[in-house]
Image (tube, rainbow, N blue to C red; front, side, top):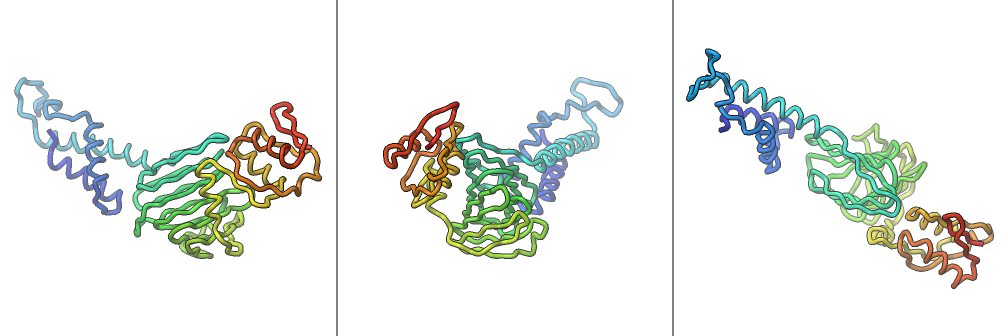
Length: 294
């Protein structure tokens, strides 16, 4: 049976760690701590005189101290676990939607990797590679930060897309608002985006000109499609290759500027190559694991 004073200790430590916010999640965490303690009973403690007597009356102070100490140890483990970043990633051609501890969701595009850390009022995700779409649960007192290169994207609740390239980051905002700027200056945003806007951030976090968000492209990749509208073959090949381990290779440089239109299944480089041969007369050959175009 739990002791009221020991349980109060557990609850108080959780309230402190959560910044004084009470929640149903807090109650479940208290339950988890007690489960971890193995449902300690008073009979597990030895009486004051050291005798393990049958039907003994256990010293109340020893029970409270022992239960509180064990609860503190268990809570320390819980808090340490919660402060460690958790890694999520996808393989080439894979998409994955993840439910985060705060109720937010993130969908990872092909070959993407994030590390997520949630502790108290801190909600932080580092986009280490690739592309991710975020649907952030609203919390006024707990900003949600996404870091890419040395750039920071900060929100309290919204839907937006972040695509990390080699030397810059694209941010497309579909709903709500975000503040962007250098990661080292979280309280000094360089730019505030509104719904329907997009911006390219340098690797240092400096914003470029504001443009229109590419909502259609984002919806496409989340559904496993790639759309092209008068896109150069060179750019189309780069995009198609993101999703496949059987890449396309242009052998004839004169094909680079060929304009491509249409909707293709992400990862199906074979269908894309064959469509080029059928519609544009491109010579297509599968050679050593790649589709060559000439």
